[in-house]
Length: 216
Image (cartoon, rainbow, N blue to C red; front, side, top):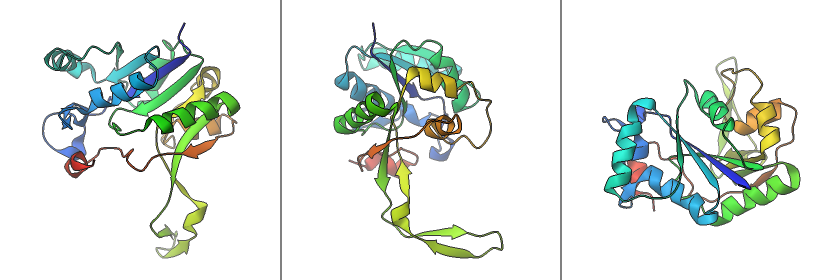
């Protein structure tokens, strides 16, 4: 019986990176990014159920990479949906764990401490979302085309994994899709549940550009 299910979303094709290879397959510290990401969660819990969403057209390429790099961590491949929402909705149908973590496939630097904090919060409150304090000044754009300074201490930047009780996340994903869904926490909040924030780690960036590949 799995206590934890990890859903790793890697359904994108990485247009902002350029090139022909989706960014989750690019090398990071000598290994494809997605492998590094999966390994983070296997290190945390080697009994967890790991579900990975990939574009259908790239499944065979991933299998070839696994053979090439002798990657043997157990995981189940699923076809990514039209939107991230649909990919996770599909993965939830296979989820067996009491707690479900949803993580971006291109965040290979999540720390074990961050993962632990997220699961601890979810066990206590139903959800655990890693965040960071905003260190740069922020301005709000106003309808009249001007802007105004806002108090940055009132804001947090959001990371993954976002961890929830599975039953809670399943209820949230019964809500219809709309463009305002930016992450799982926003959908869970829309379903009427409270979101618990925990400390993330600065290194846990989402690799988006080629420059990010040099991040240590």
